[in-house]
Image 1 (tube, rainbow, N blue to C red):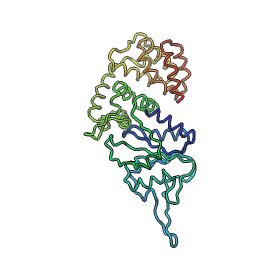
Image 2 (cartoon, one colour):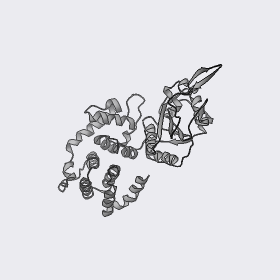
Image 3 (cartoon, one colour):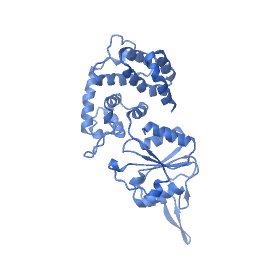
Image 4 (cartoon, rainbow, N blue to C red):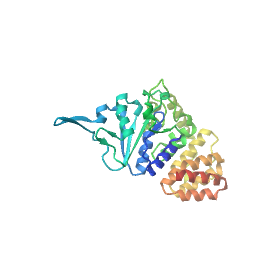
Length: 333
């Protein structure tokens, strides 16, 4: 499933209070932990995020302390004791078997020794797959059989939706719209390769006028640099946003088309700019580019309270009406 679908599924589980353990499978850098954090925040839940591969067995079970003639286990302070939240066991299958055994007690019995997971806490976990070349251990069958299992794969539309609210650079988004195959492309020969996570780092580097090869590798960085050089050939986006785009033509070069559509959807932050850019795209571009523009601007418009305006513009344009139902369905999910 896509990251957006996983987020919707976890939100449904949370909303219905389904206290079943969840296991999220997916490649590195796809955003598994970020999705869990977003769901917890959306439902006002606390989040305890544990990287099991970095813990020792005593870190999770606690330490034995003498109490008269017996010893008692003192649980670690990071395990929850009250309230409601998500206990997230990340990198579960990268943890050594001894630690997985202790984690299994939390998942199967919701307790370790005298410690019990509070009633209002969900227990979720995540891990990479063997085909991702991650150093993982096999999950014991009894443990696997106690989980609800979800497989998540990288998906550009989901990344674009997330990126719209997280400050990903306009040129990074435009490039990935043009080359979605580079959103996630593992390279076992190099430590730096493209993923949702590494493109976020690349965006931070690019924002500071730095090269991005350290984040996504030399090949993707070279393509991105070539793409960025095209930005000098873009039409006057600011003129379009201000309603002065009547004589400006829609570019013929495909990469420039992606760049101008993403540029307009990113920079249209006022009602006037949305109206002007929408009108220009509808007049100058074919339906596929109108669709890309609407999908790109939708989440930003929702965040700024402009969904009503966008819906009105859609219903007033015959070519765009068929997109309205799909867009409103995405927004509700």
